Length: 394
Ligand SMILES: Cc1cc2nc3c(=O)[nH]c(=O)nc-3n(C[C@H](O)[C@H](O)[C@H](O)COP(=O)(O)OP(=O)(O)OC[C@H]3O[C@@H](n4cnc5c(N)ncnc54)[C@H](O)[C@@H]3O)c2cc1C
Image (cartoon, rainbow, N blue to C red; front, top):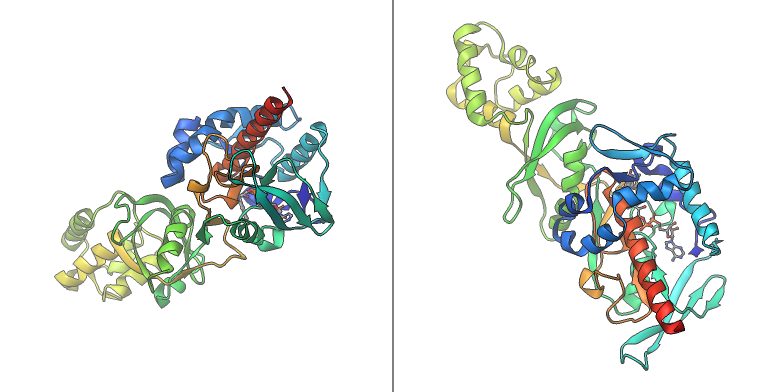
């Protein structure tokens, strides 16, 4: 194993806030749909090494795992370093050698006499040239370059002639230029939902906490949509999202509630009433955005109340960007799936090359799914290489 960092698995150490959400307590079939358009592609890997097998793998290497109420699986110790150390032990147990501080620079390709395709004849690295039987490309994506994944895997694959789907940031906070949004930095709206309001986007909102930041919003639904938003921002100047600050409560529900307030609490200011439903600062900001700042309920105009109901139930927010590569947790895009066979992760056009993990155009939301793909794809490709090797020995 060639690793250009001074120590192995540096990214694992920061996963799950240092606790490492290593998988999810669901079956392969339950997890696959979370990979969106890649859901069929990831299935053979997830079946070969499903979450339960991942947990057993770590259990037999001294790392017991536990499951949180939302199904996220962590080491009982709550220490990502235990996961990393178990992986390093597994490398040693397999009698493989880990060479840290060695950077892979390029592949030398030659025609494969047997198949008519091409094969990797040599790997040039900072420590010299290697002649490989097989190459497993596991360089990760482009996010958090300080932890080693600096996009060099894409350069290697591109130079070898593979198609790369334009990498964009995913699992990143959203930038929203509206000043009233930025003024709410630090406010958490626990029961929100959001969706992209654009042609071809899913109408189904993603539910979860919405966290206001000094540049826009974050939290699980914002992070989950950021990959699609980044991809759209490649060709569009901005993307509109619709935010509900109280999940399940429609524009009609809000309008009915306001009508009740008008009847029963006409002399009270609207933002005070709304503060019973939403965080106070958010209530004040929404009233201001709807033209109802410091207005008592009895004096509120019909149009303004309708606007307030709309701001509470499907507030349109213009997203102009996402957090950059330094802070994005994931890369969307990468080696095109059509370059690989889903059943082995072997490259169709380069016979002895296998591609696994985040370098492939596969991504999923938070919840331990991305590490699950990294582990499962690694397992499937290794199994395929072993099968080919044992066949060639017979
Ligand atoms: C802050 C953060 C938190 C996260 N939390 C979670 C979580 O809790 N659960 C989850 O499922 N996912 C999480 N992820 C995502 C997850 O960490 C990645 O999807 C996963 O690590 C990808 O594994 P990988 O092996 O493909 O790539 P990486 O883990 O990125 O490893 C690639 C390795 O290849 C090395 N490398 C790269 N290029 C070269 C080269 N040219 N030569 C030699 N070596 C090279 C790098 O140094 C690196 O060590 C998180 C990511 C981040 C950034």
